[in-house]
Amino acid sequence: MEKYLIVQTRLPKNMLDDLKEATGKKTVKEALYQAVIHYIECHNIERIREIHKVNKKRGRFPVHLAKLMASIESK
Image (tube, rainbow, N blue to C red):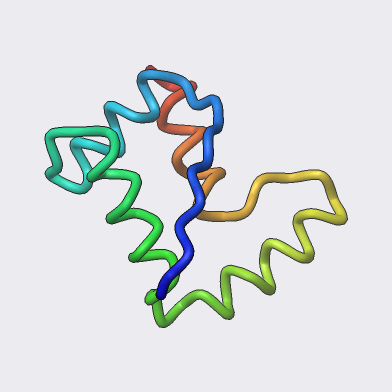
């Protein structure tokens, strides 16, 4: 039997709206689910993890988050 865990986090509304638009889902729940599944199954994940380790030491966002944050800040 699978164990389920309910998690919560704070995210800006415009980031969630962008995520819903990018995934084509109508609800935040569906969009977040698809984003998490994509992150887990993505074949580029090792490259992203390596970048994240380097950037974490420098205090920067990982590449995939930096692009998203830049697009949000430019609006």
